[in-house]
Image (cartoon, rainbow, N blue to C red; front, side, top):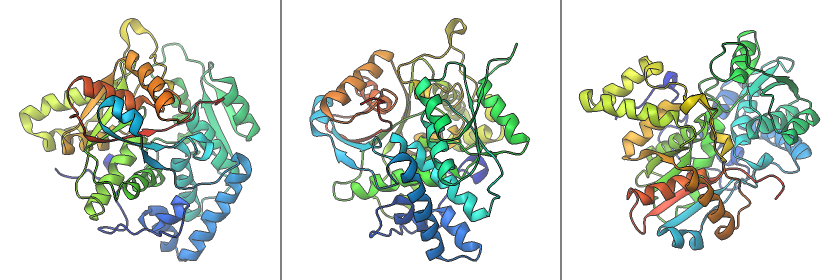
Length: 409
């Protein structure tokens, strides 16, 4: 299939057909630095590899001051007891020990390194629309980088998150819905703020594509961890705004280009029945592909995305609902690279019933010994749904990501 362009959200690798890893480093931004555009842009501005290493180490020390830990490679391990109960060989990437307890900080650290590479003025404000893990990650990394951050949150934001944001020095704006306003009010205020001059500092590649740069390190780690076990048959990734799945798809594809894996897994993007805009877009795209072919359908989607990706409209006008609260984005912003990966590998966009979202969380907590929250196990819920539908064979080698810690555990 034709690869998407950067304008369509496909970042690509500055290393080309190389999987160039510094195996002596356990910080992912050093271990995979020669695969990162932040490193390429940093050294392209006349500074050295040693300068980049020093900058990563400086920021990492500051992050550790505020979060109690810096960036380190997070584990991908077999989850034999859980896999046996599902009838598959299951591999779990555990992000609950990452900075701020989720994968989100990988995206934001990558953005912070791009700001340094570009020599962006420290006083220029950053902005994000989030009331959860992305906001905490952004506030932590922005504080470490000594950059001001505006966070746009809804009136119902969790008190723990609000207190944490205030403690990290973020400037908070509570965004009530204006009369007749459609879409997410927080995202609307965020876009107003960036239009006025703030920099998007978020895990949404449609707003700042460099967020994919750091996100790809998650895929690189999985690939290294699986090197002795063989290629995955399938990989399930939960989808809200889409940056995680987009990053993982792109990281795996680039590793395959470099020969680091023999074949790509079938990619399965997972949403819940309470909010599934990606599934609706995938159905529209698939219907068109039967007439014109998938490559042409993707070209049309890139040229007119609003024709395919439309805001989720819940029955009877209710707000999106799920215990997987972190993936209730009414638009999957970074959807094109995801559906490209799904189409290219014979995967699917799976909608998990809420009962399976709850089952997945209970199973993970009991049998995987990981303190993960329901959002973090939504990918596993997709595997449960796919097994029920016969999409994944008995004994298949399957990967999932457990992406966020359950607060208070």
